[in-house]
Length: 180
Image 1 (cartoon, rainbow, N blue to C red):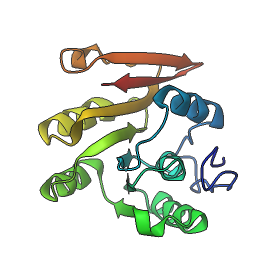
Image 2 (image 1 turned 180 degrees about the horizontal axis):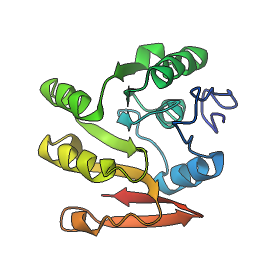
Image 3 (image 1 turned 90 degrees about the vertical axis):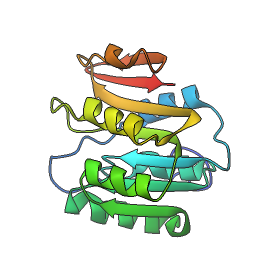
Image 4 (image 1 turned 30 degrees about the vertical axis):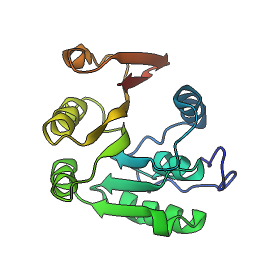
């Protein structure tokens, strides 16, 4: 796992210890950023269920202003801090070791809104739907913002089609959906 492009290009990133995370593959990450295109330098990013932090770090490497990383797992939290330190993005990062719902509440209370929100929760636990519901309820996405969800292929997000335009790409058993 590595940073694909930008100012931290080529830096190898650590994955959290254990088998509780599924790091986003470089292939999926590269395709995801090809679809997104250029990152505006004022962009604020949320990497939710961050694991290694590779997506938020990739956004920073490509010029985003700031990334917020959330994960409740201590191994993931430590790995994110280590990867941020390695890529020298400490001054443009905030890391929270907290559950997604509590962390989203904290971010709402701080009045933070995001241009990009990336979600990659554990599969088959209903966390994608719950997370999106909190994002909507707390008004965490900017007007032109984008939610990017890495999820199991079988997950149906049409319940959110009244609020967002949804574009889904499939990669084997994994899908990436873009909600705008």
